Length: 270
Image (cartoon, rainbow, N blue to C red):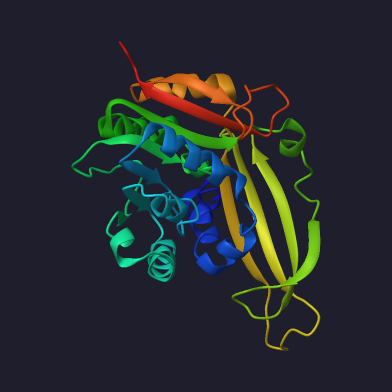
């Protein structure tokens, strides 16, 4: 039964069911948006974004004038992106945004793109080599001649992966935007070295002033860890090759102590 408990995708999906909480949590994450805006300005569109979520990156790109197709698996995220687009974008700008619910391992959009983007750990929700191969083949098929695939994923941190799975990490209480009351935030981490997957158990416990009926909400998150040299091999499975990589959103070359890998890939020449 242990194998059934380790099914990965349900854990990944749970984390994204609450789009309002997602927006609240990452409301100050803007450095990557600036990077992708600059990249689109330099290289042009049309643009395809994989794992577009609630439009955190997509909407600023559309505001800049890009024609963009946003692919997202979560219905909650798609609905949130649609509502935000209606609030933020003028009707003529919304015409340049297409929201598509779909699986990044299997999509066919009937057109090619100058840029395909996968910001903020989107690819960490591909767990097996076959998942990467399917996704990257789809990307290759949708890249226009000379097009680029640009994405960022965490650089695996060995100290973090070695954390005691029984240890509970707590953050300061805050008012949960969906639950409507203060919660105590807890995390526990369990790394599976065979599958290279980090499992995170997130708990929102009722905090001071919470209603008596309030209960602890538990959410699971599962992220594949991708090491730099492995990434080259995974790209090749889908007919892609490395064209460049950076260690931060300023465009500095990747170093061994960086926290993020920013990758530019293209169709293989062979």
